[in-house]
Length: 161
Image 1 (cartoon, rainbow, N blue to C red):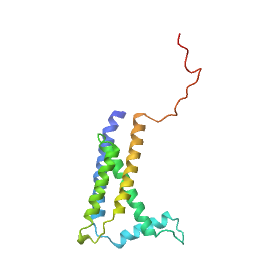
Image 2: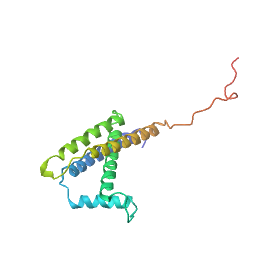
Image 3: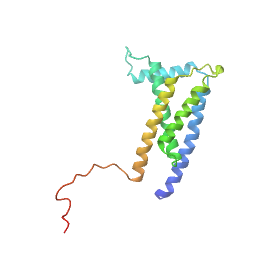
Image 4: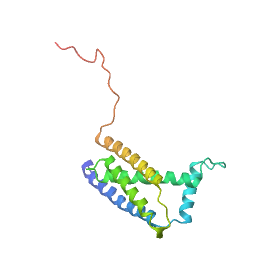
């Protein structure tokens, strides 16, 4: 299979995974908060702090922040690789708007959730990290690997006669 044949299948794969990922994001946003979600945040925070007995930051808070950042990296990356006509940083902007919508939905009283401006900033950070990764992948896939800047040397340029 040639590289040209693999490219459309990779795009379809990214688009399919994106659809599933958006369903998971929707479930995470619209599901009322439960003890299981708090336990996952606590577990992530404890793991990030290396299980230290005297933690500098509440593990639930740390886990929440890190999961908010990490959660939007794959979304932006998948969107950027699945729909290549839009630039990765434009997709990061779209993901930032998705984050605003998610926080607005959490204002629905029946969900027993709380909207938080910091969650938008954390999700946005993850979105822009995902966009940066997508830019690097695109550069590598086109063969535009950044090389060191050549320096001019007197013997490198032949004299013109």
